Length: 486
Ligand code: GLN
View 1: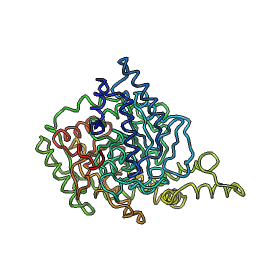
View 2: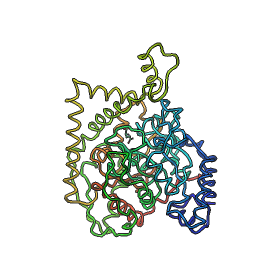
View 3: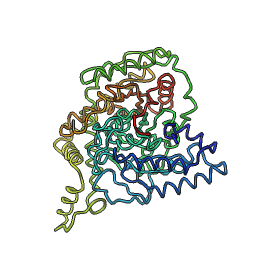
View 4: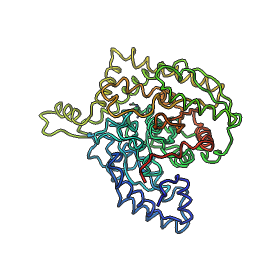
């Protein structure tokens, strides 16, 4: 069976026409997981029994012509989402033995639509990282090339979809963790507007930046997934009550007359020439399809990384204070007193990168430094956001590279946090501004996929998906898959 070469939308059709059953489809993927994932380490927990039982229920529904467009389709969840009765580690020793007592809203909604969870994906610890080398459960390998990273922090989700261990997966994006791994693994991935998808049951990293979204091979599949994930949730006070439009209805609209802005600041120092070339080629394709290309300016682009790496650790240090060995998380053996219990539980439970962020966050929030760092970063955040609003006065979409380079080698940046952080150069601004952004494949650099980033104004996900879908009608980069994984 070569059904794993088909998109989610195509698989949905086969299920609806009864050409394949959900049990067959899920079993096919479970067999692939069994056979292939030891090469990639993309998964932390696989629950075949539970998946097949759910698939059987879907088949019963399908037989009665019940269920929506996602009924019976398999997926993988990033291990940051709480899953009722299933291990939920967040990639950390801190939660090594945590079985969630409830489902995250994202998990619940996709399950209500009939989707079948096959597994929980590996990830950087507490979603901190750009290479998936920070997981307590070991690093993940990019299926495109042995020895390269899949990106992070949703590296397990991206590697699993790239290796066709599932047609789609969920991820979260605080500073690029959906778009950057999508770029490195040749996938389509969307980070919605802040507030579009509920954060309830999604273990918090930086609450004002975190958003959930899907990975898939096509923009159309992302649209189908986002449709099920998006919408107001009374259990997340930051979720928006803005109505969710149809994300699939407008996909076929042409690019004629679309105004695309290309920020001059993106094509500067740090950008790999091979990545630049692929992105320039994509711009040319958009032009030929009838779009107007305009140069725009995001003058504060150079401040994005410093602002992000103050705001995100500050929020993380606060969010992670709950893991104290008493209320949540790993507890050390034989503590002599309460202070010893806190200190040793946290020292043992957290990895190096998480500790680094907690230290930075505690420092920038401390009385003497709050004004100079945290408050200043918030002011810069506002300037960055204003730059985008000015640009959107003139254009509909902003386009550029997702990452400055294609996937790098394992170990390359692990001991140099600053060079690791610089990989987030083009992604963090969308989180700081709360804007929706997407990465789609647009070529290769030395055999490794290159990602094209598209950004639109708040709650314009439908336009983002339409532009991405239209690009995928005139190019075939999204159809490429790593070789040798049949
Ligand atoms: N790479 C960024 C970081 O390490 C973004 C992570 C994310 O989006 N979760 O913070």
